[in-house]
Image (cartoon, rainbow, N blue to C red; front, side, top):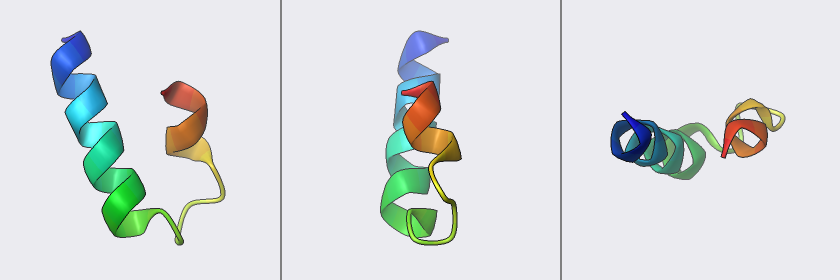
Length: 28
């Protein structure tokens, strides 16, 4: 699950990094 979470976080940060204030970055 850790690998899946990391991949999702990277994709979200790369795709919607500007849309989110830092929700994904905090979970990293």
